[in-house]
Length: 111
Length: 118
Image 1 (cartoon, each protein chain N blue to C red):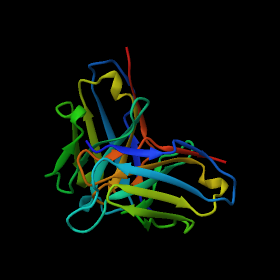
Image 2: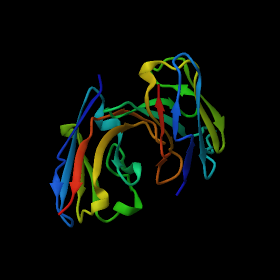
Image 3: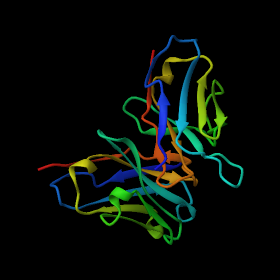
Image 4: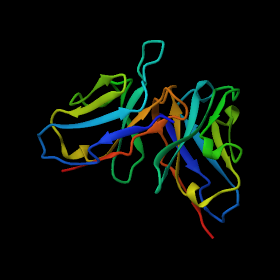
């Protein structure tokens, strides 16, 4: 099983300041088609998870451009350029290349 | 607008069975892969199973193989998860999600709670 390790597990941020979350996978997420299948999800309090970033850096429809993803191979990062109050919740990375598909433990972001 | 609505969660005794349903609207259901994900106190978010549009392809988490069955009825725009031989560690919220392949789950339902306890 591909293990996804996120750091930090919790993050207290000031509105307007940047935030960064790291995600490392135990094996490469690069497919032979050239795509890296690493995605980021946000679960706001009391809600279902929602897709934020797919395939490392592509923002899903409606996701503000203050969110960005980067990385390759086994090391990935989610960055929020200027945190807003609505960004609180738990952020999860997920790999979709290897079965079973696996999630990171989650990073709780608080204001 | 894509909507996914799960139902069927309940309190069940260990060893019991439960069938979860997910009704879909606002998408071409018969052309979509679909996935079940659960959120448990012990393991957080876990991918459970997914199914191809024609139901010819089904994949499962090892710990549920032989106990859970994913299936669908494209005429009813519905996805199901038949869960047998339930264990305490299966307790959690179960979500259905539209699957754009390779883990890109772009729409999720609100979830349904399964509690396995005596």
